[in-house]
Picture 1 (tube, one colour):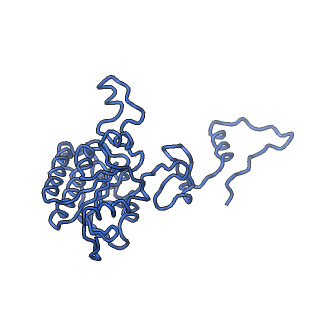
Picture 2 (cartoon, one colour):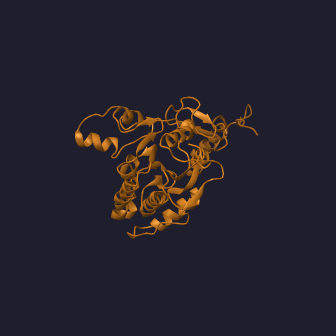
Picture 3 (spheres, rainbow, N blue to C red):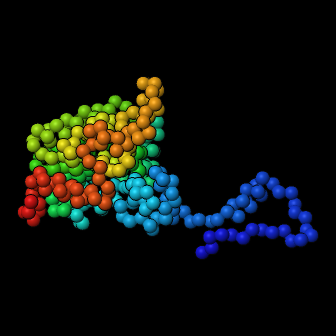
Length: 298
């Protein structure tokens, strides 16, 4: 396959016809290198173009170590023991409770694009032999905004773990509340938080893993209510956006404001863990909390 196309030259002695705007655009396109789509990814941290084949299953930039955003399927693949994930509430889908214009069409478009029913996937799994309930939010689906279905799936996952006496691990990623569902979306903050409280009252373990980005209503509810809160490097964590806050307080915020490192420094995160080490870290946490493994070992 040729990556470069030859330029069109005019023979000596022949006069070129006046070139139109469309002709100039077409010539420019012919002269530019033809790079196949999907071969390269741009790192949002260092700006480097990364050849996809240079990255492994963890999707980490080989230049700066920046963590690319990954899908729920990829997250489950690198976290759960092979063949142990059993999905819960797989067919739960959103309605249009507020009658928002074209909301049904938007949901259908996202479902077709991502292959997901909604912005969160929950289920049972084992992590290094430890049986747990897991929830993973996928930012590819409407930025994993929390509407009625996302809130309900997270709540049911926590309640199921409470009933069975299991720990729960939730990987958060969200742009906040889903505006198309109005007050019903905001209600999910209270509902998920109440489920976390009942899980805690039962003496069970909840590990929250904050990934990029986790903002708005998710950040202000179950994402920051874990018994142990982990975060991926350089993840954006916060409630309102930088410009909103700066405009409100009329002050300039630090450059690393709302980064995982800033939150760790100020006590809002317990530890920053690289993606390649996350599974091992979760296993260690389970072991320290005397969670029983499938093989009976602790």
